[in-house]
Image (cartoon, rainbow, N blue to C red; front, top):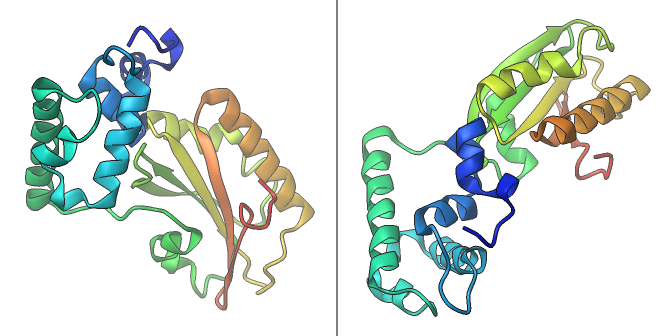
Length: 218
């Protein structure tokens, strides 16, 4: 991994923040260890990730052998790790993956009918799988109740790669208030500093939801 800056090396991230903070490509980089003549390890990892994403259940020796630079040793490393993951999946089941704002809604369905505002934080690993969903505050949102340190303290403990925040509007309006926008900006800025990205901030009501990310507010 000599072609990667030290602070960006997956092994360094694992040492400092734990393995859950790594993206899928960074996990592959860690497994490979190094690139091959003419190909750096990140390019190789991206192509492997693309092959796996196309059909995770059909990836085998031949599929990986078609990637330039993949020899028997590296192919065997990847296949062995995939098989280990499959066996764990069979025993434990798969966590839901958050790929769109609507994927968040089942995690916060308990907010339906609430008469007070609730502010929640969902921590996610590097694969965008939820780690924990926590209530940060209840009542009217303000700077003192929703402070970045309160939101990110648990995210750091979880060794999260990112977070999604959600709060409800009992009034039924989906328009973010000026306070909502201020809190969102503060959380996004704090996330940049601590290295845990704010992926989205959702407002939910009994009749709908709004994604600040999709609205262009993050």
